[in-house]
Image (cartoon, rainbow, N blue to C red; front, side, top):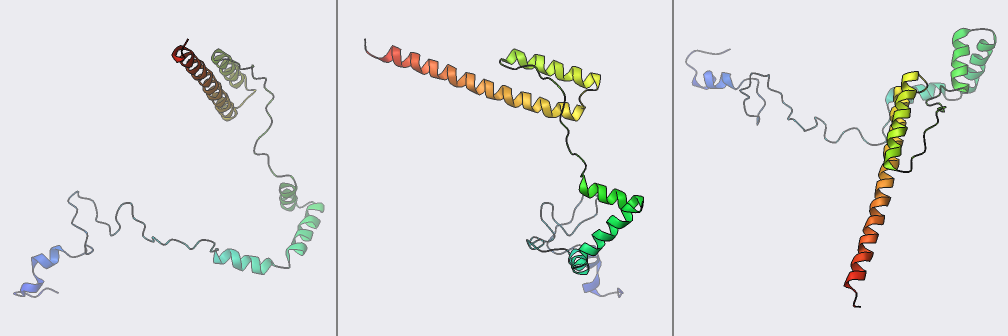
Length: 172
């Protein structure tokens, strides 16, 4: 408690209360934080290779019992338990992340062909043959191929120019 007449416990002392040392006051109206922007609260971080204690404990519990647990799950699946059946099927046949696409992409030999290929891709999305995300991945392929074509074309043009320059500068 503040005592009256005590100069060491005056208004100057009270104004600094709650602010961490070394951080200047913030006049923006926002609450002051002890952490600075861009600096981690734990610069060392979690040690590389360290494992979660719960995961380690569960592995120790299951160690040696995995075969019996799998056997029991298979038995329950065979007897018609839908949860065990789904679990076994998910482990045997994992869900597909990607599927092959039945889509004929027009041949691309020149920049004008990329326009045709992109138009065909958009039409396939419109008709439902290709999903938008699949089309986006195919568009990346078209773009990469076009960059390769452009780089090859540029290299050929530079080689021709260098050849012309060396012929013009050589003595006749």
